[in-house]
Length: 143
Image (cartoon, rainbow, N blue to C red; front, side):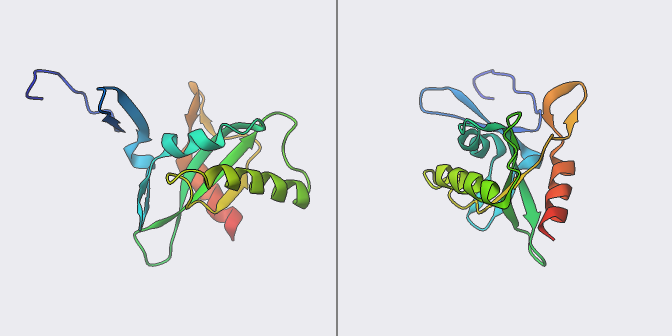
């Protein structure tokens, strides 16, 4: 850049705030384009990860027929022993998560919550969720 800093393109999205802090929002290839703007994985998932029964979450985009837009969905991997076994338990868990989402402009457009027992991850990095595989699973789960 003009100040002499060297930047390396890694495929991540982020921004510098007014105090000069760098905020990482997630991978560019994982953003979910919606008519109201792009939704970023890490920014959205942070809200769902606050729930005590959530081990981790993943924002994915479900295709909309004939459109460039995606419908945002959040897939939840519950903490061990917290997977909702009944329809009423699933609905209660979903309601709690949607209430969390409603408190932020970043997540209030999310209406779909799905539960997955164990996310597909990169074997070298358990934290690297294979979102493409999870998104395909979510599409099949919706049909």
